[in-house]
Length: 461
Image (cartoon, rainbow, N blue to C red; front, side, top):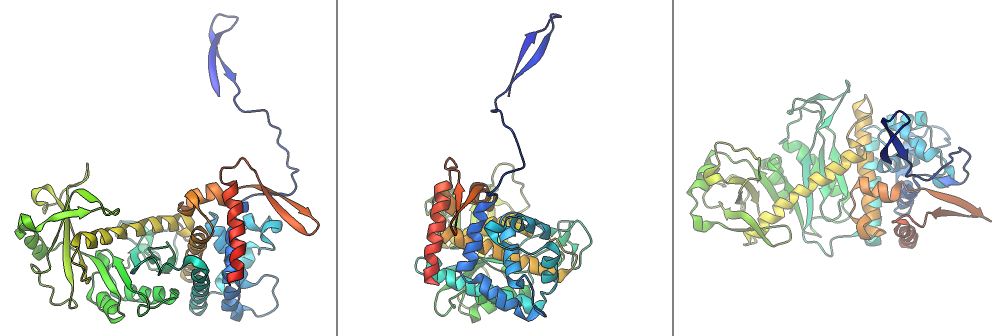
């Protein structure tokens, strides 16, 4: 809207507004109009991959009498709602109020009762249903094992604030209050493999939690470490003997951060300048003002598995970074352990630095229902976390299998803006319903093509 100043009758100037928007009349009498129409794509993905059927079987023991809404379908609808941007049960209304698009969807009280019925045993069954759907998605073309070696599993923890007293919430090391879930993602596809909900005061380096999460993550994969090479990456919280030993026992490589303690500092200071070589960036080009070196022979690693190596990177700190007492020659140092025999330490260091991508996945999780756990009970929130993983999987399956262009790699917010929240008009001719998307929308063709590709996948399952 533009404004100009013009003199009035009294000789003083006043603001005159000029309209930019076209005239528009608004009435509440539209028919056949669909909002959030693109989320139908996720609902169909759940159907094509067999997730709905597997979830129905997983939740079947909770059915005591004939119900109008299948509990497994209710949970899948919740996952679609979360992927669509919902963050509480009442957001199911977005799907429920559009039966022509999403069918019959349960009420909020019904959904609440279904979530209440998910105990530890049902939670394991839900995980099994997710694994079945993942196997179907991989069989339909998602399988990354042909082009990726090894498969990389990224472990990391995060903090989720609680703004009210909830079961299991506790003070965090950042002086907050809430939870500290531990999560695992598959780097090649962004699939959310597993998560464990923990109190906010849970130790970041708890090896029992890491081993438990490892078992949950491996159970999600259609392949085993014997059939496909695997690597687990983690920050320094993963550098515990119990966790590393568990990886070695399962034939999985490790690459984990390591705390720069006193003996490591001394070893770095003793390194000859000739020991340093140029570091590599993620695109395998030279990383400016960064070098790497190997510390394996300079530090006692006898308590770690045979073949363990220690590698250090140094680089100039970014502008505004703070220094600590150990910053020789103005460099910052990061150290990690690995058991790869590859002689190219620059490549190994660049591979470990790729662990930072897990932060993107966790940020996506927080933008997909994890930012706020909506229930007072811990078991309900554990179920919610599993639904968040399911929602992320549905988006990962959809992007990898049926989308292309910018939407194939878009983060949740952009995916919703461009595709999931698009509006359309539904018309019915005979027994055929058609969703009409505005042809001027930049991603209209992408969405229509995605539906065609998805329906072609149904013949593969």
